Image (cartoon, rainbow, N blue to C red; front, side, top):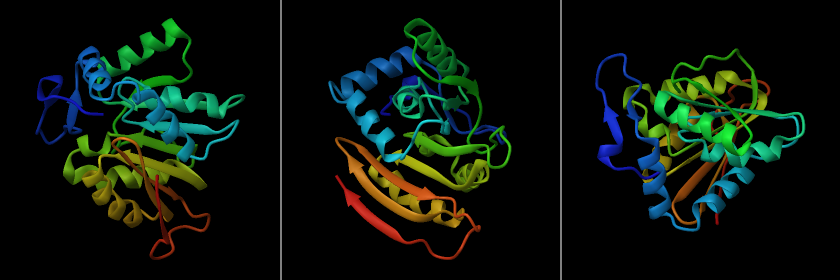
Length: 213
């Protein structure tokens, strides 16, 4: 989601995951003011694009304060689970406290997109929103490769970001081995891409469908 420079700490050290947001309350306030009345609906629409169902195991990469995690949780009930990860202890702490206070679905843990702490094929779907552009540029291809790895064959990917970032992500998603790419927009700022981990492994250039909404 949109953020100000004061909401984040940028670390260029070799072991840095990228831009890490450290002020969750300020982030929530800024996001709510930037997208009055439509933020929750936008995330609900993005959750729909993930094509989820009861029992699905879902990973939300770069979950921040948990907006998409919360939107996804009802779609996988009963029997499913959604785990939101983020490299910021402050964002994860905020998401956990909110979940405990309000009874929101989903669990939260520290984690970085480019080194996912999960076994191969652990998830039925991976989702991520407004997060990959925070990953260091030289680690983004690795991040999509990790998303591919933790998805089961036939598993689904849904990536949402601002328009310019989404265009650049598309090439890396294809290079990671995903197929069946589709793209579109959810008002007002979310440009989404969906794709599938093929059951037989990577197989050449992806078919792409545009679904602008």
